[in-house]
Image 1 (cartoon, rainbow, N blue to C red):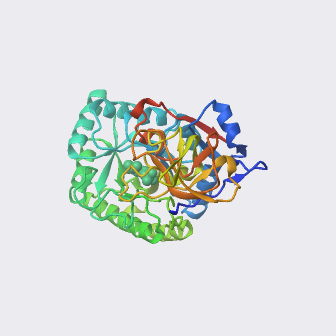
Image 2 (image 1 turned 180 degrees about the vertical axis):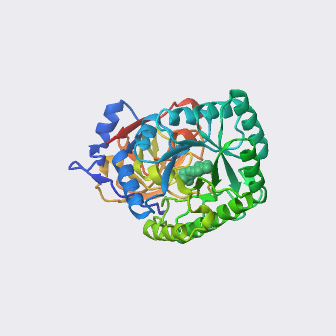
Image 3 (image 1 turned 90 degrees about the vertical axis):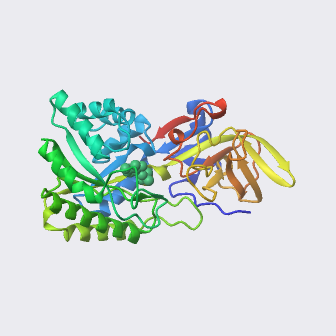
Length: 408
Ligand SMILES: *Cc1c(COP(=O)(O)O)cnc(C)c1O
């Protein structure tokens, strides 16, 4: 038997023993959309999460949603009412975000001219990734006769300790190296742009509040140093994100009370040049990851060399991350349950797979669960972020998963 991550809070069984999501039984949710596989996301859980975060963070801190975590338009619309801004990474995401919120910023390497043009025309803040991109943005703005909103993304000299994905420290395709950032700020100001400040993103998926707090202290110090060097006070400092969620056995949620206290102190002690600046954090998975559940149906139950396999109609074409195929070194089990017997005791060890013809398509490896048969539903938790749109949906031609929001 192998361990799996803990089922996040907010999921209970109904009177009939089935998993309830947002108060509705999993079979009722499947009936609503007509078939499996299905992503269900309980927006009430997202609202609670944001409320708890706002309660502990400095009151003036802006909270942005990085929509690449889950760009489903209905969800982005719901998020727009709950956060202070939306961060996007392509023109496609920008179109969804601009329809939902007035404050949109666009980061990401390789922005094409037409993406820069659409952003400038829409009044979106561009987080500049390079000097070359700055030149192209300035030329496009001047052709359009518009003052562009430009922030400088900095590739910091530090990274977020313990983060699942390092985005700073060393040579990177993201942002401008810290030692050239002030010169770029001076340049865009001299060219008449509306300089919006700095964007400094040092990493992602960290669970250690102290490590995140330390990165935030370093980020504020770096923003102050660069502002002094550029002799310009930034309107906004986007401190990046980094808050992870506990996917795996032994993982613990970020201690946000501690993080909130540390950030409150960091901002209270900030250098004078940042005294009039606003601050933002941009979060993706932290806001939506735990609120989403993927439901798929068991199609076959078989035994191979004494091992039980439950084969479902879902798979890595929707769950690249949950199956351990999205940037993980060692495959570990996400929290998974038999949704139709959610309150039943775990009595046997089985592996749960998807329906794709590849050994990579393993949803759970040798976990202890109740006895399940064809027709039962499997729930894969922690799938509200980096699910449908981060997976090779067309691989093997099974088609997309359905998506449903509840308590919206
Ligand atoms: C992906 C991304 C995020 C969100 O990351 P999460 O780990 O989902 O919180 C935030 N900011 C930038 C610049 C990103 O590229």
